[in-house]
Image (cartoon, rainbow, N blue to C red; front, side, top):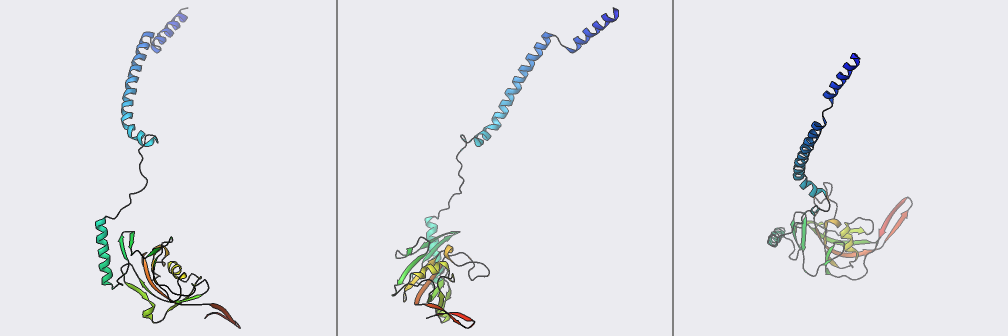
Length: 244
């Protein structure tokens, strides 16, 4: 009996050590709740201030309509006049023809200034008929014989068959000509003269292995002399094309 009583007293004392009283437990819980509310309120203040901008940017309905495109640089009218006069002075120094077109270049933006009699095609080719020839226009497989003078944007002459002393002879349809040049000569007639302004997209390839070192507009004064029919001739093991 004493042993049991002693164990009960011991258990009762242990219970007092482990389990607090109901009143103290209620007081502690209320304090914890009040403390938790203070922590939660403080946390809300801190999170709210930090998350305001993040919420504004992350939420599609609240985010501002930021543009994904860079601003297009426009040429100031004063700068355009200045660049035009600068291009004219350079062309005069290079002894360009009097009616040579002007190019206003600022970075990668280029504006071509020509008289109203020039025609611009959908491909970007610009041309002027100085003289309209007679006869039929050349077709694929035919050979065109022509003179030309080539210029760059600054009016400097880069090539001329007149200086070389003999006209050029090229068969159409085999991609031997610059795309813009072939497009411009296709609807010419023998005896005609035309000025071609070829954009870089229709121009020659560029690079160290080519004559052209940069993508620029090229200007060609073309004179179509004649158009010849071509036929393939085979003699024994030898075969060639004869144009007459």
